[in-house]
Image (tube, rainbow, N blue to C red):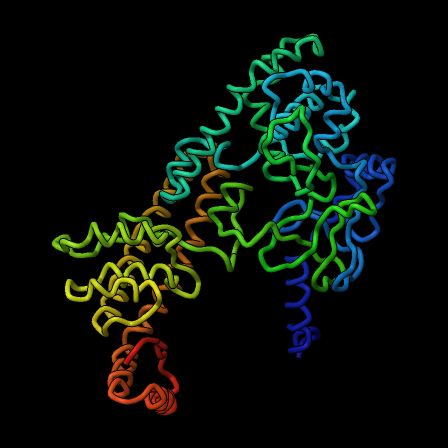
Length: 480
């Protein structure tokens, strides 16, 4: 046998390959990070746990220098390193903000400060931080309209709202920018352009951490909770990690502690929250692969797509769903159709003689075997419709990637979103298919037990499970 060709060698090579794929490339030697570290040290912060690195899949992030244990402090960033509204008020912008009416929002103050400091270039005290910020973002408001048109309908609507909101933010701020003209030798219109403000808005929206500040009269009543945290904001998001992050009033530092162990030379993550991929793309400009919170949203028009058009009670059913907040957040997930989606479908599938039982449906009770089966069939049809639509969209995006080379990165981002949604739909389809065959068996068990007491019903179900261990059984509740 050749040297290095045995089973042990193969295992070792596989481990080395996995490590090389997941391990980041150290970037602490780069000039921008050397300057940042010096700048942070001058502000009383020096990190001993983490180093900047570039990782496959997530890009630039922070890598552990040593093994990290659960509960360990990984970053304690002094208040002097944070950019907050207090920072802005203490700056040359303070007097202009204090006298402006109506009072500007905390968000406008921070965006104005970022644009102004970036314009200052080498003269800015915050240059080392500004140098490592992204020059462009991938939030929907920054994407080309033809790319946004490829979004799923719910996300597309929110993206258009986001764009309108940022445009209004810019338009309503122009007079305030004009009042700052004495601070600059150039025309403020060239400094505070829409593109510059958009960059600042995205910086705050995607990178700020939550720090509650006291309310100042010179600001509007909007929440004053933003804080930009240099170095700390290099941490990437993972939906599967747990960390504790908050501003410590005693130490006057923003602190992050791990809630799980992390091995040496691994990427250290934080969690932005239990967000689905559409929310992550809208707010942060990225999609999380294998996100356990990811889902596919079912809109009202798709919800009724496969229901009989002859149903005279349909409008009333839709009205009931809206009144009881069951018309939105209906989804398919990794574990199949959500309870809310199935509940909405059960109500919509009620026969005319069952309609008076709609309250029981919303409470989770079983109305009839037919209603249960019909709602599952409709869920299957909706799921299959989404699968076909998603495959068609992926083909369209693939074609556009060949034709629109300049939009390759943006199209790849949207392609990733649709690919993840396809995986979810395929998982849901498998679950729905698995429920169809054993459904009749489960109903037979429940029907047999419906003539008996609840206790006897349970015995029938347990006996069915014992005799058919490979079957999937629906556990339903309700009066016999």
